[in-house]
Image 1 (cartoon, rainbow, N blue to C red):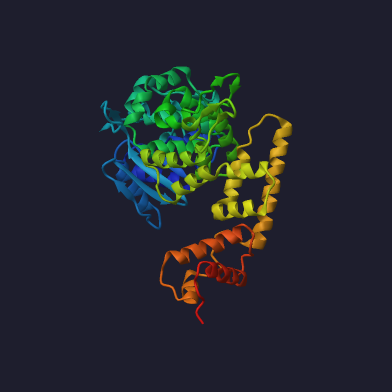
Image 2 (cartoon, helix red, strand yellow):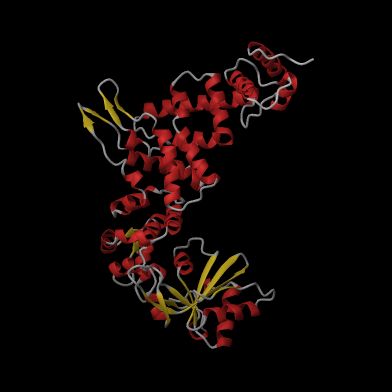
Length: 472
C-alpha cells in the first residue's frame, strides 16, 4: 500500500530532503500513521525514526526550514523535537531495547527499522511510512497492524507477557487505546496484563495518572475502568474505588453496587463536560461509602458522613499518585464533600435560605456541582428519573433567582471588619469576628438583605446586645 497522497504537507518533503543530504533512511511511524489510516485527527504529533542519528536529522531539518525553528535536544534519550506549522515533530534514531526487571527504562542500542518496530508497544503503533525517494509513501507493516486496525484489535508485536513485563506502562496504554478507539484487547494480551498486573508498581504515579487522565477524557471512560478492574490493575492503583464493588444483604435489605453506579456517573458527566477534574470528582464522589457503610434495623443501610470522609480520602489519593495538590485537588475535594447537597435540596422544599448557603459554599463552582449531581441520577425507573431531573430544574431556577437578588456567590460582607473596629473603637479581637459572622448568617438566613445599610443597622443592634458602645 502506498500513501504518498497523504504526505502532501511540505514538512514531509523537507524531512525527506534532509535525510537524503545525510544519507540516512527515515520513516514516519506510530500514532500519526495509525490515526491517518483510521481517519482520525492526526496532524498535531509526528514521530520520525531515522536509521542513524535522529538528533542530526532534526538539526538538518531545522536548517532547511526558512525560519529555522529551535530544536530541543534530549541527549540522554537520543531524541530531538521541533515545532513547525502547529505540529510537534519528534526525531529518534532506530534502536533496539533490552530491559532489567526492576526498571521500565531500557538499555538502548542502535538498530534497524525492524528492531525499532519490534520494540513498539502494539502492532497498530508499529506501522511506518517511508520518506525515502525509492519508495516514498510505502506502508511498512511487519506485524499485520493494518489487519488489526480493520478488526479493531489491540495486540502486541511480540510475546505480550514479555512486552508488558519489560514496560508495565504498556498495560495502561493498551487499556487506554481500547477505550479511546473502542477496540478490543486480544484475549492472550488481556490475560498477560492480568498475569503481570503487579509489575505496575514500578511505574511512577505521574505516568499512571497521565494514562488515567486520557481514559477519563474519552466519551465512555467506563470501558477503560472496567478493563482496569477486570485485569486487577484497579485494585492496585485505586483500591478505594474497587472497595465499592460489593453488595451486602442483611435481613432482606441490600444496597446498590456503588462501584458500577460510580462508572455510570462518570459516563453521564462525560456527556456534559470535558473538564477532566470534574470527571475525577465523579470518579471519587462515593469513595467514602465503603468505610462508612453501616446497617441498623431502623434505617437499613446508611453511609453517614461519606462525603466528608471522601473529601479526606481525595487528598490521600492525590498524594499517593503524585497528583497536583493545588487548586485542582481542592476543587475535586470540594465537589466530593458537597456532592449530596443539591440532591438533599431537590428532595425537600427548596427554601431561599438553603439555596443561599449552597451558592455561598459552592461559589464559582455551583454550576459544576449541579452538573455532578445531575450525572449522579442513575435510576432506571423513568418516572423517578424524570422527577429527579425536574426537581433539579427547580433548584437551578431558585439558584438564579436567589443569586440575582442576594448576590451571595463569592460573598463579601457589606460592612468590613475595619469599619466595625472604627464604629466601636476596637482593636483586632474576637468580637469583630463574632459580628462579621452574625452579619453573614443573617444574610444567608434571609433576616436582612445583602446591603450596606441593613448590615450597618444589624451590627449596631447586635453590638448593643454584646455590651459594645458606638463611638460618637
